[in-house]
Image (cartoon, rainbow over all chains, first blue to last red; front, side, top):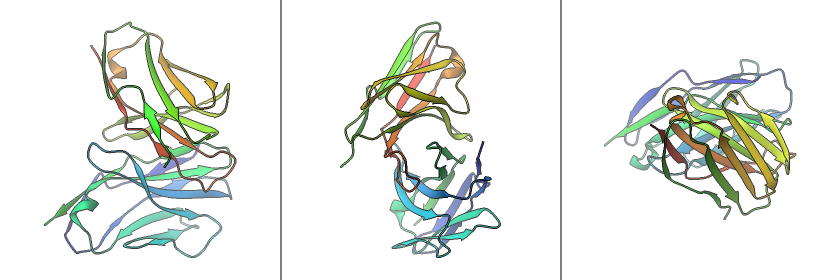
Length: 113
Length: 114
């Protein structure tokens, strides 16, 4: 089975600064997608950004961008100009054509004012 | 907007009880998932279903079963609840057959087994 590893249980960042959350994955598939999800305290999980394995260009959504290194099976999330509302659990996720979706253990991000 | 609704936000059950967790989605999604969320362990896949009456075991299916009789509803069943099943349970759904579609989550059910 595919595995997703997030090695940083907790991270903190100063408001307006930049932070990078790490994720690695293991797969033998060639066609897959990677996602970052955000789970704010006591609120529902929502999608932050997604990346297709075939695309070399890194995905970007406003202040959120990824650094996708396919050969290294690495998929990190960069949050620029951090805001208080970015405080949440962040989960890296993997999915392939077999339809299931696997998540990492999560990183709790604290934003300091 | 896609809506995924879990029947209960909080649930307290006794050891040995049969427990049903219900999940309903309103967007005609083929795929539905049940995850268990525990601190430090993230989301672990219990079961997923890629169509009506179809199911696949995830990473931790022991002690659980599922039912999907209708496309919009995916039920998680704890046949005989145990204290080690105390956890947050998350349901999700997504369009099937494609890798790029995002999953939409319910609000979660925090189950306590006493």
